[in-house]
Amino acid sequence: MVDKLSSIKASFEADVQLVTNLEQWEVLRVKYLGRKSQLSDAMSLLKDLSGDQRRDFGKHANEVRTFLEVVLEDTRIALEAKGTHANRIDVTRPGTKKQTGHLHPLTRVEDEIKQIFLAMNFSVVEGPEIETEHYNFDALNVPANHPAREMWDTFWIKGEQGKQKGKTGPTEALRYLLRTHTSPMQIRYMEKNTPPFQIIVPGRVFRYEATDASHEINFYQMEGLMVGPHISLANFKYVIEEFFKKFFNDPAMQFRFRPSYFPFVEPGVEVDIKRKGDSKWLEVMGAGMVHRNVLKAVGYNPEEVQGFAFGMGTDRLAMLKYKIPDIRLLYSGDLRFIQQFKK
Ligand code: DAH
Image (cartoon, rainbow, N blue to C red; front, side):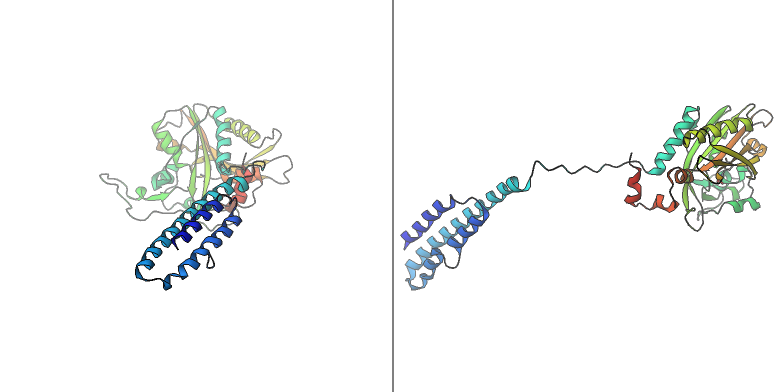
């Protein structure tokens, strides 16, 4: 009986050498461990043996069984590993392209705008998105209760309105809000710097409005400010025409400067453009000569220095340049849209 087990083991050891793939391996497994295998035949004889013999034989048979199992398992693993290399990699196939990220269209447009102004010796500065009522309105010549405040639907920030810790003074002007435009940075910059200078201020702004194809509750603006002795609207006209011609790559485009009202400028204008192929005028920015009250609010003498200021929507410029029909696409996170702006 024990000889029988030895011969099963010996023939298995010979057979296993010949196995070269998983189909053959399965045949081998059934032959040696299946219900009709020699080993299970031998086991079925156990019940006819007497006590001692049964124990010896049983022990031996189990050892052989474990041996077969272990060797079979090792063989399977080796065959599978070999299969991976032999069957799964086809070195002649083209590789999968690595996905790389790229700049968001708005970031790209912001960069393009910056480059043009940097070349005209403007500096780029940024300001806080959470502002006080003072910088967003009062210092820009928009006092509380003035109807001009209606121009900006504002997100007011709850909580402490009024005095900041340790400070005294008017409480109203210290209420917090999400800036409705980038203009407050005009004040912050003028408070700390002496003319002449010229800056642009890119940034995110917020409006408490219903959204549609051309309105979002948050969007981006680009503010501009140039202050110095003898700065005039003629300087503004030159700088801004230069900018738009470069931005839209259209040296022959037409401009229209329409009188308009913004509390922080006098006179105020709105700029319209008409590019090659445009059938109608497109409004692209608000601007004007910095109001005397604003210059005074930051301690400048309006008799000595003047300045022009402008503000434009970065999203709107992106939409015009790249023919984007809905501002909400810019914030959708939809890769089918975003990936069209891969350079
Ligand atoms: N801040 C204005 C807005 O958000 C845009 C603007 C108009 C900015 C005239 C200016 C300006 O600097 O002079 O609607």
